[in-house]
Length: 584
Image (cartoon, rainbow, N blue to C red; front, side, top):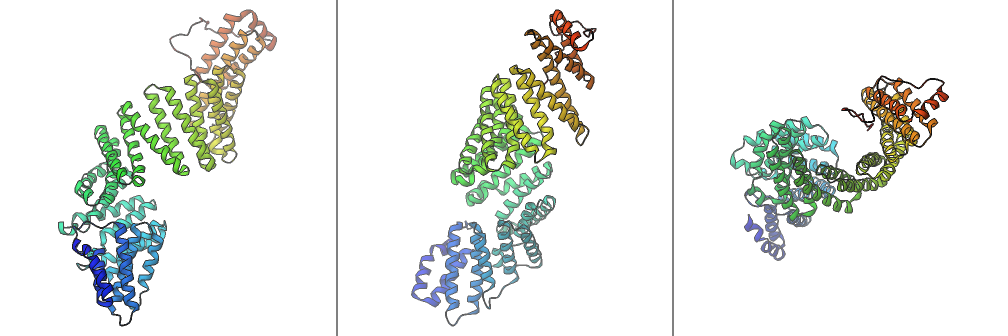
């Protein structure tokens, strides 16, 4: 059929020289190019197919509008309008494809075979799917599948498609509707049909087979059926072999990228980490090749596969190699975010947080803090565009950044970030109290820790006390078990803050303020049976009595009218083998 394509200029000349017979000859040549009989012929590009389809429609429309029209001319006009719709779908012009389908049905006197009607139903379903009209697409695919089950197309009609292609579209629609189990069942039926075909029959559905098997692997993975996914994956590898890549690079290479990424995920879950890494590396190599051909199509896949490779390297604790992958992902995400910040800034932020974790694993805390600062900036930009969606993530990222700064010794920055996180969470609680009220307590605990480390003991105690008040109320409602552990952490932190506050007051000669802190610490022990809190209280009182007996004991009597408490333990000035909890 390559010869027919090569002779198109001659048939065009014939159409100009002899309008009626020449047009019919040229129309027949164009129709043959759009639906070739020779299945091994490398398909034309979507742009060429669209140009031929438009030309064929113009040729047959001219014949129909002229006098002495033949019935076959009307049939071929309707058929080529359908081929025009198919070509429009290939270039993403689904609205115009629907218009062309309607025009094909409106050709007066055109005769339609059952196979042609089934093909038209299939095209309509694909257009509806592309336009996100999923309920309509579901109805159309159901009719299309039913129609193909009832018919046996002729040899020439097989080029229009068949039941495997219709089943694949039906499965895609079900997947988009989150009916994954039904979708996988349809894919499995389709795969069974393909396995039963002869080599000659498979020649017409090689691309459908590659797509079905690759998408079936993804569906099985999403259902957690990893062993089955790996089994189908071996078959899918054969369906997307290098020969298929050479013949159909624009269609097959994206399938290979996704297939290898899915196989890497399944292998990782089943515990074969070296094989998972190998599959992830194959996915990255395919994505790079795809990016070299088409940057717009390849870069998003390159990002996905590099993240997959980073995950596998993290599991293998190969942090140096992981760091290389994470940095490349961050650079790619940053470039994409510059073009589409509304889509890619939140993804960039999440990517930078993973990069920060990797930096920390390699011991580079300064680089980890820098990556988290960039993540906060990305979340801030995203929050400016869609506050309701991204401000919660910004608050969480600020709180995490505060903890990182505390570990890095930047206490001023830690306090600043934690204050902003608390303020944001309070604001979010105004519209979603149930979710954010308890989160406010957690953020207050982070702020309290930063304030305590910076020496602002009064403010730290106030943060911990407010956090305790919030969690004490939340610990009786839904999620009480989770809140109970958070309450315990808050009380440990409060005990440490009160201990340090009392010590600071005593050192600076403010014995009355120290006694107030010790009273609060003693009251805390009566609200909880936590061993860590009681131990902290014993240590605080023993230290105060041992180091500041002459000032703290009289101040206690003045404030309480009672003798200073004594305990069985004596302060030694040095910690024992078990360190007291630090209130983190």
